[in-house]
Length: 291
Ligand code: R5P
Image 1 (tube, rainbow, N blue to C red):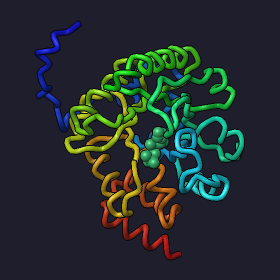
Image 2: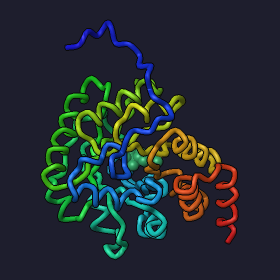
Image 3: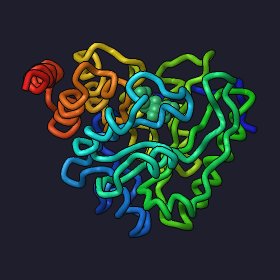
Image 4: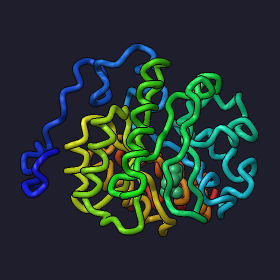
């Protein structure tokens, strides 16, 4: 056990100094096997190094919340504009057309709903992920939650072992407990813990000082969108994250709860892949909304 009374805040972040990629376009991924690189290259665009992941796994936790009541009607029309889909195996098999030809980051843990406290979750058999031709699997880690931290880190660890066996990248999903401070120090810790335990991608939340979170995480970070914001604010959130070095977004509610989800995912795509400024992207959103 380290001396917990002498945990010094990091200072040498090397902000602005890119981590060496050594022949592969994604940070921290150069030494992976071919299958892993192939799958990551289907999620992240090798031209831009970025990805717009469309998250619609909310039902596993929240049930039929606004925007995912009828995935066939609300989400399927958005699929063509996403780089990657994030959903559960139930929704994938039931409602996502296999002809979509989009990579899938499969939600690979289950067990928690909004009716209970966070729990340790069971993790999908990786063989089913392979059967579904998943490009990656996503596993939640509850850093700082006394009840479930160790169990969820063990889940991630096991998923990484399976991922190595089958060539499946693992995305560590940093959970935010009710009592945890949502700041760069916390997200920096949670993201780093995921990467240290073998995650190939980390999903976390944007916060002030996010450049430090990204700099200290040796693998690509994508941000969740979180609660629905006005469109301009959501585009600013995506823009700020990309400016801080994020490799993309894994956005759900700010897309499918938008007044014009197709316009919104296309505007988010312009921010992520073209570095479009939020005001220009908002203009694009309004133009597309009115077509
Ligand atoms: C949360 O547990 C889910 O994994 C969502 O996929 C994630 O939070 C991204 O969705 P949103 O942008 O709506 O937060």
